[in-house]
Length: 211
DNA sequence: CGGTCGATAGTCT
DNA sequence: GACTATCGACCGG
Image (cartoon, rainbow, N blue to C red; front, side, top):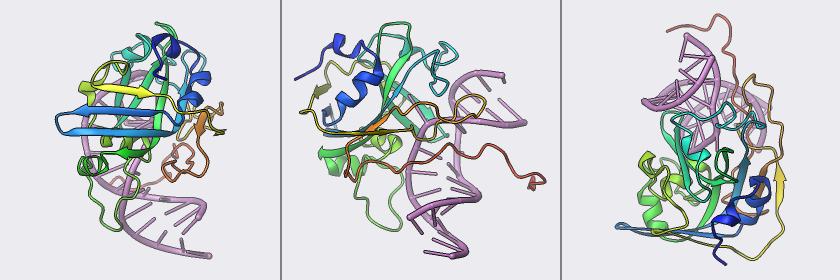
């Protein structure tokens, strides 16, 4: 089944696990890449300190406050893009971060799109982690706002499967008081699911050299 | 394994 | 000026 816009216009905590196993396909002049989603995270708005939309609409997160089913693509850490599907009603700022997927078609293209070529071991999971998933699709900020329910995208839900859930990766929230919600969902036993990491350390050691 | 750290630049205070 | 919805390398056990 191909979900419509109303399907996404719901609470992302409900929608996110339903996306597990879905096939998301992207077609471009370079070729086609199809992903089977294995790991996602739900983000809400004013009640979710871990969400980009927590403090309201800004230029960067504006897409999150728009129509459900569109892509919220952001750039972070000075080098990585990430892909979200906007969920809920307009103005709520809800979304679902796509964190991991099995590349079921177009693996050579997905690997060729990687900027950093492997130094040690060959890449076995081209779309493990949100940065790598976005890179496998060749996404940039120019893709922010694109409609995932229209060409060149297509989406087909999988059959419901058992999933697991736990705290979101790298989320601390303003104030650094840690993750509050178990809104990360994944398919157990999938190699394209990233390993858990808590939010990065926030304080530098006192007397650290300024170099 | 698990912990730690550098890269690198946009965003927000 | 600090932080970041990350990644991969490196190091110690």
